[in-house]
Length: 351
Image (cartoon, rainbow, N blue to C red; front, side, top):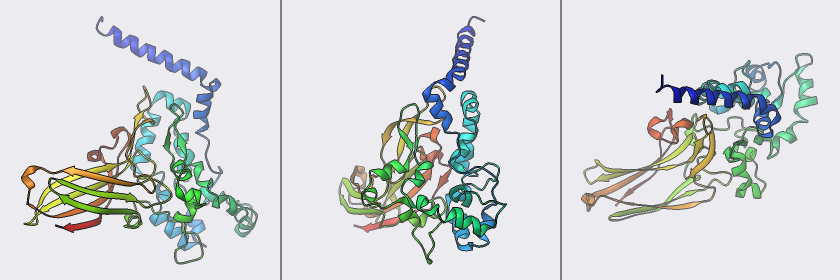
């Protein structure tokens, strides 16, 4: 009994603190701010569904359903894992529950992720659809084209530390693109093969081809034994690569081959954003502890020392980029990734 007493005392103390917090949270600004995160960032009500819209807009529907992460925003493993962890925490579940998760990811009832009506608004079943277009959808287009429209969901800050934990919007605000008035929509929704905006948005989990030499440049690759050096540049003018964080990691894999064609040595360089998780609860990214993202326009020089045993034995180097998706609680450990993209080889150099 004596050995268990400290553990019991800690448990009771934690329970009392949780109960006090639950009692006070409505009157404390920080908790009111947290609670506001449960309010959906879209019009709430009965959805007709994306397929209904697709009857008149088949190309847009195909783009959304095939290429967009929006279409699977309520079904992906990262979303479901996080929701389970979040709702499994007594305090967070009592304060916000899964409502916080669905505030941006789309209606739970429809379970289509971020569909047409999430962004454009609901279609009224009580009036002809073309009337809804004229009265609601067309007048709303100016708002949807603004640089601030995407920030409703893509601009999340930690209420505890104030860090921008899921905020590609904050990256855009300080970018060259923002200074020139180039919005998110300008790049991500540029028309393709028609006069309507592209609705695929191109998620790297669905379409790795969105990144190429025009986005990530590798230059000045030099082998001066025992050093191999190179420069990598983010040519995207609107945000860092990988954007946001911490779950997506960009990985540069460097393979060095001998004259016999066999791999003799490999190097792995990761780019991402790393956080401490929320104190006590250990669930949600809180304060930033390290940032190795490639910032917009940044040129970074990398240099590595090779083992002495490789002298005069390296004939070729191959440099490959991949994206790894890693749950927040694994903090960028790519060995625990739940998704690894197809590689996109940027350079092969023969020495």
